[in-house]
Image (tube, rainbow, N blue to C red):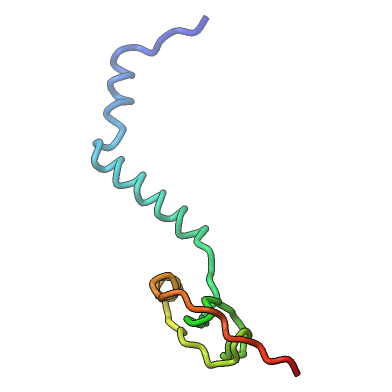
Length: 96
């Protein structure tokens, strides 16, 4: 059977904890670091008419052949622009 710690040592343990706002800020910082570590990396190029994104050295759309219409520094901005663009039909392919 284990004994409970003496009342004085329980008080000392409670005093060792930082105040509640500091604990909340520390927890928020830890969650932010965790989310930032697992953020997906999106491709840097996008074509608004086709609604596709790609990465690599080629800056032309693989679907319609036109140059990339989106090459932003922030991937979230590119995704937002693609989602905000009105839907359009993909260009018709000509049989050779």
